[in-house]
Length: 172
Image 1 (spheres, rainbow, N blue to C red):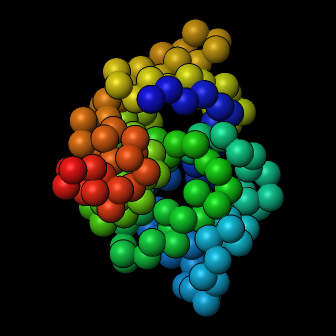
Image 2: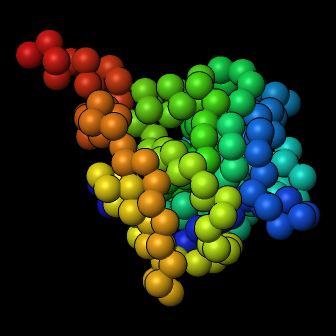
């Protein structure tokens, strides 16, 4: 799969990628009564200092870049669904929390692990193209970075539209 879009680089006041963004920062528990996925996007990252207005600025097709252990914490599916609601096309992080990673893949939301991306020189608003089969991230200004390609099973689940649809294909 190929993705292209404007990037959001989740940095702190020190200019470095934020590590350990937990599911409560992504989708705070005060919004758990919201069950309509279409409405969840408005709350994305509003509990992450400095990023409270992210949902108001994000556009369909945008790509988010974060540090290590993105999605740590609970098994809160809304922390995946809020990005789906905003039509974020791809999340890229140094690494993902194990449960978050499983939830994203199972629900056919694309995530890409990119160890070392903290050292890349991408900035908010850069336009990038990403090839999930090779892991190549290319900025239109010539910046390049090599992430881990999607494992085949992840690509297959994404292509099927989710884990349940993938399992149905296997039954045939």
